[in-house]
Every structure is written in structure tokens, then in C-alpha cells.
Length: 325
Image (cartoon, rainbow, N blue to C red; front, side):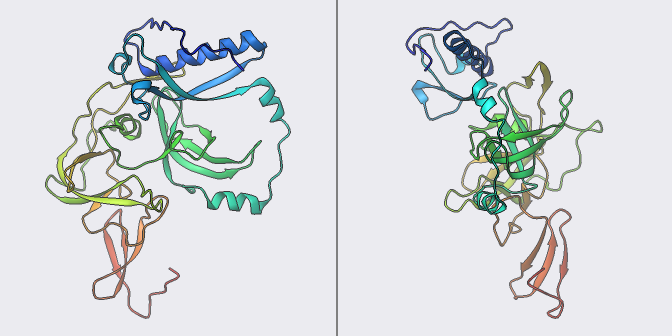
């Protein structure tokens, strides 16, 4: 047990103002690591993955926000973190064996599957990537291995996800700009050297966008809306820092969408897994990434295969169609 005095004031300083939430997280990590070493003479690695104000304890603060947006002198900081001590790491040397049945049972309960697009919380920022492994044996079963997207100065790498939780791994969808702007920035690709590409949908066209999956069944959820504008600018800070590397988030995204429920969202990528023409949301909802090829039933009962990336369709003759397709 670390004798951490919760009510003892802590003074946080930043050599390169402004002080942002990620700076606060790193400072608290260092405090906990230092206290643990002082009491036990054993090293510990701490990673803070959520920072909150005690005044709004259910809301995770974006790591890129300025601290003074959420805290005043005397406020209490609430964090969630994971830690590993040297003794824990030694215990991991003896890796338990898992049967294939155990792995399959674990895999069946996961929220995502191979090739799904996700964002992973990596301390100062979230990184987007694709799942390349599920139910991976280690000292315990790891839910996912994720290959991150390459960024300027930050090459792609494969990282492990320790828990199947939105706190550390979120599905890539069209995020809520009021509370998830940091995720939109993390997921939005930078413009190519050739500049803004031609988009599939124009202003005032009716579309459907994929948002967070349903809490009821964890299946995909699509909402209807109208394209408000192309290439809107994202507000707020553009700079990011991680592991001594700096860069800039995308300044624009393909679409701003006015939703039929009165809200609005950004669509950070012109891709069939995130935005489609109205009426083309999947007829069969899935847990993971939306499929490019889909066999759909028309109003007259006939079947057709639709390529959602190109919007090409192929109508089946009754003799051709096989439900196993």
C-alpha cells in the first residue's frame, strides 16, 4: 500500500505552457512511481488512462484540453490508471497455457473481431489502427493486438490491448463532437500531398452515418442526416505529443452532417464503413466493421449483391442465389 495522502495539495508546473491534461497525467504517474519506489524500493510503471474532476466524476477529460478549462486551485483530480511492478513482471515470465477451446470461448465474448478499425488509448493521445489478433495468449489472455496507422514521425507498430473496454479501446465510428472531438482528431487521416480529394456526397445529399453501437445488443447503429458541408475545419488545438514525438492532427474532415434528430456530427473519413447513401444502411447489422459486400433483399423480394464502396449492384437470378453466399 502506498501512503498517498489524497488531501495533500500538489503543485503542478509546466516548463512549456499551457499545461494540458496529458501533462497532468504524466505528473501524477511520476508521483505514484516515486512514492512506490520510496516505500518499497521496487520500480513500478504507471499509465493513467482517464482523468476527471471530482466535480464531474463521470466525464473523462480529453488529454489535449488545457487544465484550466476544467480545474481551479484546490480542485481534486480523479484518475484511473494501470500499473505493473517488477515483481509482477517477473511473475509473468511463467506463461500459462490456454486450450483452443478456452481461447474460442474468450474470443466469442469480445466486442470486436479481426480487421475491425479501432482507436487505442496510448497515454497522451489515442491511436487509430486495425485489429490483427484476438484472444492472444500471454500471462493472461489479451483481448486484442492492434496494428496502428503510421503517422509522420511515428511509424506503424503492433500494440496489445489489456482490457476489452471503451476506456482503452473504442470502435472507429462517427464520434460525438461535443464530447469526443479528441477521438475525431485521432481518427481523421491527414490530407495527401495532392490536397482535398473528390468526395462521394455533395451538400444537401441525404446520407446515413455509423455511430456508436447499440448498448442493447452491441450491434452497429446507423443514423440519418443531410450533408451540411464538405471539408469543415476542426476547432481547437492541432498539435499532439507522444513519447518525445510531435505532430499535427488533421485540420479538416470530409463532412459535417446535420442529423435528423436535431444533432450534428463530423464524418472524419469518406468510407463506406462510416457513411453511405440514405437507405443503404446494412439490412443485417453486425458487431464489428460493416461489410463492403452485402446481399440485400429488394422490396419485390429479389436479391442483389451490393458493393458499398463503389455502389455497384448485381441482381441475382433465382437459380444463381445461394444463401450461403
